[in-house]
Length: 298
Image 1: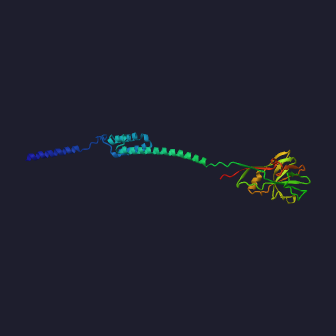
Image 2: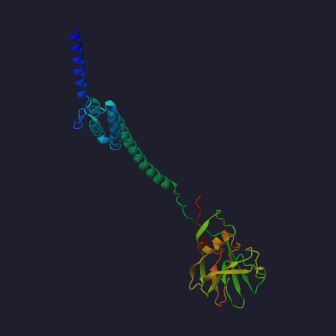
Image 3: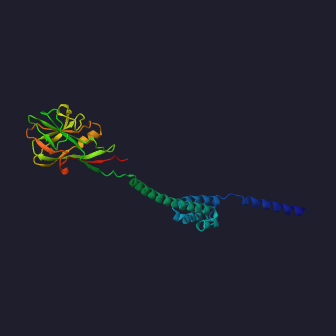
């Protein structure tokens, strides 16, 4: 019995010594962790970063995602991310890749839409531009004209076949108007000319506004209208057609800048000038008014 206890005590003491020896710290020992597998969390983070980059470059998404996942460790998840996009890291890379393609496609669509919008703006601009109305030219011989003579102050000359402008002792003045002529509201006259047929050449003639209304068969020297602002001068140097530019006068009449009472022809020259009147035998020699106008763009 005593022998039995001695053997048991010896075994306990030996076990204690071995245990103490095994637990002693060795400062020179190296720890090799290369055989350990990286946790899934690390691989997933790296795979996510790669996937974000892959989203910007869709063509490199699979390879980049696989490379980063493989860098996380040789596990099946890393290999899967480089292939079909399986595993946690591969899944994130694949999603970013799909997002990248979608972004690229959307960008392409927007680009096309932008080009189309540009074309629409150009077409809209062209369609919105309205061409100005074409000029309209009218001619009329429906004109009132007469003389007033200083030496015959109560004589009417409204039906005479000739118009006389003379500054001798018995002065003759000529009045011309077109009271029945109407132009559309807003008309802008670009050209207005009065054509007269000169039958006897003479000295310079002054063309002026008539500042008061008058009637062809009623006006006489004693009732003649007041002479207004000068419009210009003409001279008949030989028989034939002579034109008077009345463009500024017509625009003044249309804008109510001046009362529309026709024009005066007067001279101080004793070498008088004769013109065919609106009662002349030959219609081709009668006074003719030509007007070219345009209407404002609506």
